[in-house]
Every structure is written in structure tokens, then in C-alpha cells.
Length: 371
Image (tube, rainbow, N blue to C red; front, side, top):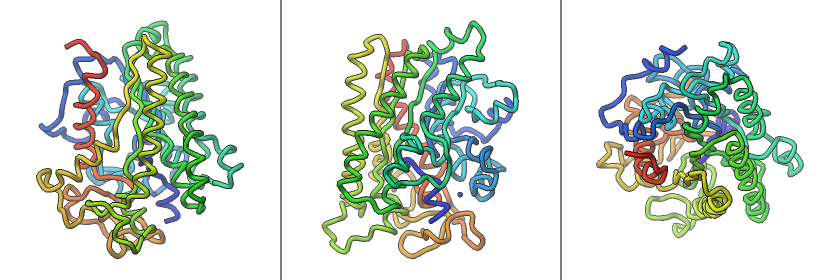
């Protein structure tokens, strides 16, 4: 699921990259075989490493308890690292710095750049407003991130083209916030369904643009099973037990995520045919997340807290729209590593690590890197 600041708000130099936190021995380093020179990330709060807090220093993500495991808040919407951090490490690259941080350092983005912005949408602000959907977090959308990317590449040296061809591009996850905001503004089922093809088209256009920059390996991640997240479980509470699956996730919401993902998979297949010389891979965030649910106990998660936020307050799911993580008096659990959800909207570092490991194992053979 693309996570969003709006739900939280309504409802939060080079050495730094290497010493952020100690890396677990569980880490998978297989991506180093690809020889990626850099990683370029587009997306939202699943990947933002500091762009939103540059834009809005008052964001909850600029303050503790966010970044609890990192000794300081970095703009990451978690207690620690994100999936992109583990992916970068597995490729033997430094953690990606945020584009807006690099602007202050004269484009010093060695090893790649993170263009993701927490709260960002796939569709531009004007398009959403025309549908009476408002982004209360940021004016930035996927189109803005693509402009940033173009600006960045235009400042590159002559070696930039060569580097791009040997880099990994992550186009997403993006689009989940479009749906989050639409749900927030009480859009009908028909309106929600109609929104999906437009979101998919925006993602497709973004992939075409990064290919135009010279990208040769692109990963396009799908959406999370949003019906398993505390923010949705606390707001949508069907009385019919048949509305829930065996994991007590809301079937209808997960079906919506699956609809988005199926259209995205079809789009990726179409792009593969259109660009046979480019490796384009679907990133199955849905299955990566469900692998945690299916193996929660063996992975060390507290099965009694599988649908509760570590940082939060509320009834069954430890989440309240009116008093979210970071607000005064909101407690933090003493054992975040036993929780999947950090704040009801985003995941813990431990959950992101397990997801990243699953994803790396899944995408590596598809990236067709030489061993």
C-alpha cells in the first residue's frame, strides 16, 4: 500500500549512508552480481528518505519516534530503514539520499538518488482536484518527481549515460495515495474502480520516461494488501465475519489492491513487448507482505499484535485517526521488531527487511544479471 501523510496527519553526507545502522547478517547481497552503479527511486512514503521533511520540516516524520532505530529522524516513515535501503545494501551501494538533500549539496548523489516523496500521488494534483480529491500533504506527484529526475540527469557529466544504463530504476510503489485520499473523501465503489486505469496510465508513462533517459533495468512495484493495515481495519469495520479472510484482513479492500495489481501486471507485460531491449520487472509487494503474515510466528513477530500499530493508540488496532504516532501522549511499544505495523500506516524496519529479502529473491533472476 502506498502510505500517506494525510492519513497520519488527519487521522506524520556520504558517511551517513554507510553508518545509518548496523546491517543484519540476514541481509541478501545477491544484487551485487548485477553490478549496478546506482539506483534511482520514484515513489511515496514507502521509499522517501527525506524529501517531504525538506519540503515540510513540521511533518511528523521529522521528529521522534520516527527514526527511533537510526538515532535521529531522517524523513523515513518508520522506526528505521525502508525496503529501498535494504535493496541498496544488497546491491553494495550506499543508502540513497533524498533529491532535495542533494540540491543543498550541489548534486552529490553518489550511488543514486531518491526522488520519492511521502504523500505523493501518481496523478497530478489538478487531476485529483477535478475529481474532488485533495492531497493535504504535498503538492508533489509522480510528474514532479520525473521533472526532478530530468533536471538531475541534465546536470550529469558525460559519464552519466553509461551509468544510467548500468543502474536500477524503481518506479514506485506509487498510486496507493491516490486511493487513500479517494477513500478519505468517501468516493463510491464505481469512482474508485474508475480511478485505477488512470493511475496505471500515469505509472506506465513514468516507465516510458525513465526508459527515455536510458534505463535498461526497471522494477515496477505493485500495491500492498491494504485490507490488512490498521488504518483501514480501524475505519472499515464490517459486521459480517464473511467480509474478512483467514488473516482477518478485509477481503473487499484486498480485492481492490489486487485489481490495481492485475492491471499493473498487464501494463508491465505490454511494456516488455514495446521495449524488448529493456528488462522490466513487476515487483510483487502484495506477496512480499503476505509472506510476513503467513510466516509471522517463525519470523519472530507477535501474532497477537499482527494487526496492531506499535506506535499509536486506539482499540483493537492501536490506531486512531485523531491521535496518530508522534502526537503528544501517543505511546510506542517496547518491542517494535515484534510488530509488522509501525504507525498503522507504515511498517517497522523489521517488516520492511523481511519484505525486501523476499522481493530481492523474487526479482533477481528476472533482472537477468550475469552471475
